[in-house]
Image (cartoon, rainbow, N blue to C red):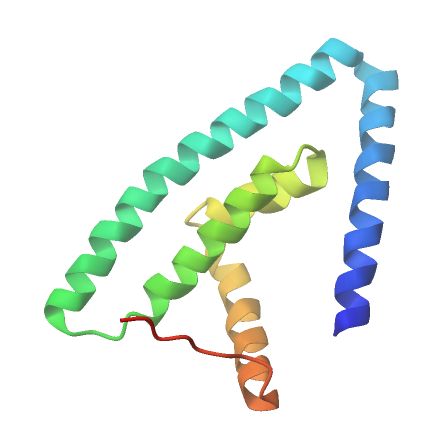
Length: 131
């Protein structure tokens, strides 16, 4: 698992730089710069809007005494998507926006639930309860 994470950490910046150089040579530097800024702004607006929606949804779940697992996974999706949108680049922006949009989020939820279950079964996941 650590090797896969390390490979992604090393490979993604190389691919991002290659894509940025390719985009600059195809469309120009100003267009590429503007594209990165616009996607970051759109992503930030989406995160803000969807975070409010999830917050109200989570409050309604607690009121009705439902299992908040869906809202926890949604919150995790937003956190990871927001972090990816902060990082400049095309690949990270695309994945970040896909994690934030409500109609593409279920595709990632299945993988996140599987990964969390795998980590919990292996004993590599810790819950911290702060009161």
